[in-house]
Image (cartoon, rainbow, N blue to C red; front, side, top):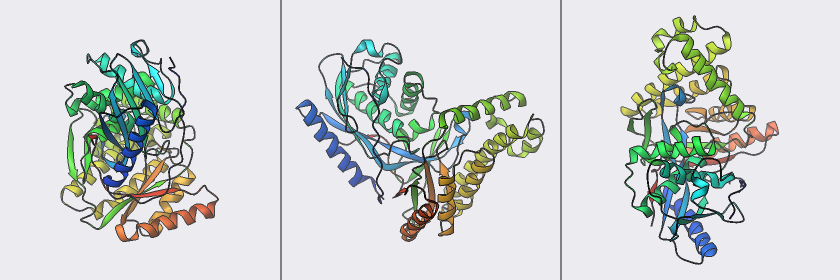
Length: 408
């Protein structure tokens, strides 16, 4: 029985996708075809979960702050059926062979490695929470690009969790599911993500952004009707490798925790903008000062964005997005040349606002654009990349899509 697997990368393709239907249908077709081919049978159903972009609110999640993600029409689909015993077999279109594991592989973290660890982690988290998890065969297909900061891991976890919960008839309220999926990634896989990615993959609604308080995990669905406003979000995959991402992420998280301790607050979320100057004056060095300034002002930008969206002022959020990027570039220092080039080119081509989204050191840029100018902005970004000698970026134009759901 194999419990080792290696992740396989597939480069995302440039495309325009403005609704969840066609993409989800195509991915589901591939998942079902993979299931039939590998298991010589018919799946009991298909379950899908989306990737996400964070509209605004970067590196605020682990500081007990606020974030505002929305779900993408790019989805991971799991075709699954009960296996009839206490074991799990999982196949991905990005890998050659299925991975099979039994209860002994999920009695503690780390026994399944590679891409299948995300699946085993969900089984482990459910069992650790006291749920009886049905044995199953699963086939996975996805159009969420790997390594681009669109949270392909959370999409996979959420799709698997939704499938296993349905197959096992588990009583899992939606508000409890993100924490289980996050636990799979944190404790089993060993990746120190916050709660935002899994919350977005599971709890988002079409046409809305998810206003999430990362301290108490309360959510509010904020209208984000881009279509009605004649707008769209252009997502640019920078194709920049995540240079030093793990170590730099950990470094910034540790700096924030030290700063909170120095300021005598539970988390940087508790430093108000009105008291920021006084707080900065108590910090030991310029680097820590800049890290704190980013987090505190970014939390306020999230609140300001939410207030504008509540009153239907969608176009007016553009400057807040751009200010967020400047703060990430100058104070948190998590951008790279490809990312900055994409932002500058998008703004120069008429984007209302643009920013890096995700943890940094690579990943994606989002730009708020007039829908009829999206192609022009994308072309300008590609031309700027070519002038710099960068690998051509991927682009996709999106509208907010729903969270995890059963398709068939």
